[in-house]
Figure: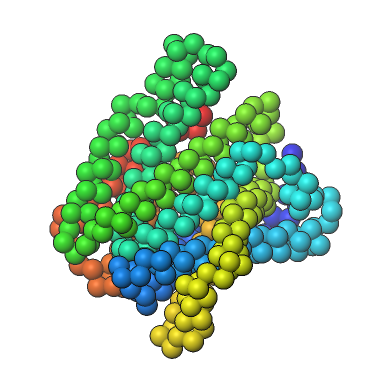
Length: 369
């Protein structure tokens, strides 16, 4: 087990675990709200319906900036961590020496495409609309988990009876029932006139959820196979150690995602793509605060990911998943309040249904894959 216990007081500052989780969760929710609102305000400075090329380029520029800043922050964190706690911790060294495998590249591309589609969703629709659609991510994850089991067992030449048993352990009656509850609640939210559902925004939000769910399933299946030989006691870590491991995972995923994002952006720049040059020029010359909101969206995107990983390191995966649903509901309410979107009685009922469905959905069976 990694020797992080001596560093824990420095990390927690003497706070109790519950207080630390509460503070980090609050920061996670707040920074996520600011990111969603800043992104929507940024895209509102441009007419997404009239200038599709400019909208795509702005989303590309925003996504690249978010991923690059996340990478810079993470690498800086590991550098400072190694200077403070010494070379014996070795996390930054392990990160640099980590061998990149094919599935690492796939995970990175999925993270990039998912982040890009989220920003495209903000471009064509409201932040409330995007977060409503994102409530369906647990269902997308469930479907992909089943497909992953079928593909994995087929590669390993397992019998169909074994595969069916594994699927039954995941697709329980509880999950099926909660799936319909979540769909019902989300439908009530999306059918409100005040929500103004945009087909493009809904499509991009669904694709984003599918990419992020695919990333999580692929990462979970590959990591579980690597850790299959570990005993339960070997998996226990201090809060500080778990946090560092979480940031290390975030660093690697973000770096793998930043590579294709930068490649696409640089390709457009090198080929002297005039719309990109015009967009960058207008951002710096604009007096409507577009550059300021771009900076906010980039910074708060990095912060909410860091706090999300911190909460994950201090809680179980199931608890974090529930908190993530809570974050989306808070995002819906915050964006609706900020942009003056009035939620009807059916909309409020939809939020309650989605929350109940998510609570029922998140049982421990999801951790078996």
